[in-house]
Length: 176
Ligand SMILES: [Zn+2]
Ligand SMILES: [Zn+2]
Image 1 (cartoon, protein in one colour):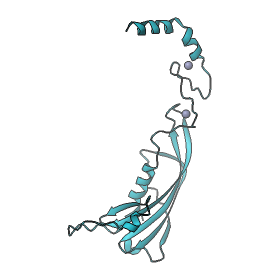
Image 2: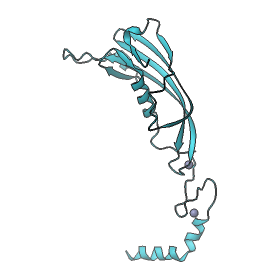
Image 3: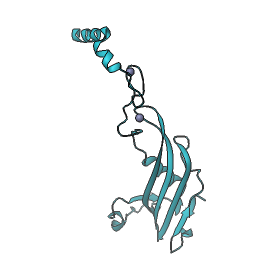
Image 4: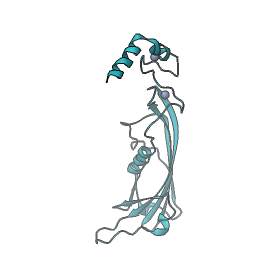
């Protein structure tokens, strides 16, 4: 179901709704609700143009305040799959005019098969930001008492300035 032979793609293209969710990286990511995947495949000789979208809501943990939140995401992608003919040692030439339409990633495949599981998994991982915040202005946690500053003011900032420990801290620092 998730593997499509190039030869199976008709001239007018092939539109698919992918119901099989086995490709989803469930060990790394938690989703909330449905996963909707649509792809459109077009074949041009030994090349296949794959366009698609992934709609998913992910359960994430904010890097700053450590709260869980749900973020809906839509990932659009376009890929060109090109059959790598390496058997005869010939260098693989990537069609310039395809590569020139920049932004389109060319994926070389060993067999004339579209491995949707692999490709969708990759697109999902690539689309994840390195750092994620529940909101752009998340205040995070107080470094003294651990309070979530989005929810409550803890007053640590004022106390620490006047506390004897703060003064002590300054003294020790000065000595060094
Ligand atoms: Zn946060
Ligand atoms: Zn605090």
